Image (cartoon, rainbow, N blue to C red; front, side, top):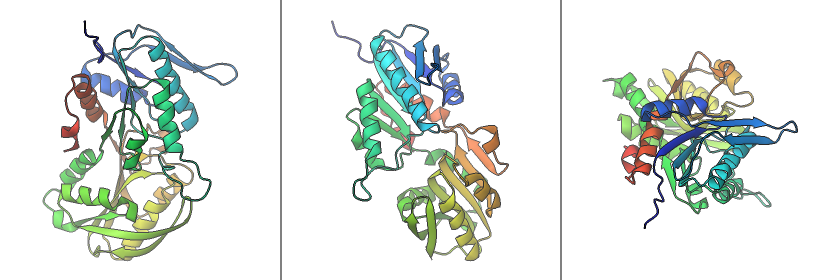
Length: 320
């Protein structure tokens, strides 16, 4: 008798960081959200209890490891362990925003590679697969010893911008805010049919950026800045000021993850950026929802990925 390693049915669970995303995914799939209780003991330790059987089921845990990063990561790890010990058929960690992704190499002597450590923790906890979106560095996929489905936010963002642009594509130019985002920006530009420009930036220290040169033409154009995340917003705001100084008519920013830490909100409010388009991979509290921020739902993409994974179908069609 062959074991059903892929589980008999789909069950979706959510820890504390991505409850709204999980509700939307369940709505897309026509499922109810699995019952679980996530809290803390009096000493601050994370407490997780599953409120229903997962034996033999294909379980998907929706949890972004955003701020508070360590608490959310521990919730994910403990929930994976709980499902493993409850005999789940297959456990998939759906991590819309993967924290610690920026420490993906030794930038200087005695640096840790935290992304590899977190990958090992998720694998050791008992996850059979990971699904994430727009990892800060694509090589992080290789840090895992389990399958990783790396989804892209560009199709959602590009579709929104293409509808906004309409037949005025010749008025727009996509700008990469630094050299690390060139490939992402080039693919985005191809999707919406616009030319590409690049900002050459020097970063003297962490979270401090300095714009140096602009490669390409932005004079008289409507600029679309593209990045994978907005953290302290220094890179994005400096890029916006640079293109406006070179004669751009307006600036719109697109990014998958709205981390928005430290002085980000103040910088964005004071910047010349007219609209900031983000995905809901990180749920923004009310105080971070600036009038110029618009969030698009990535839930349909994750729901389709979950359905395909459960049915052993390819996920690659979602990239287009």
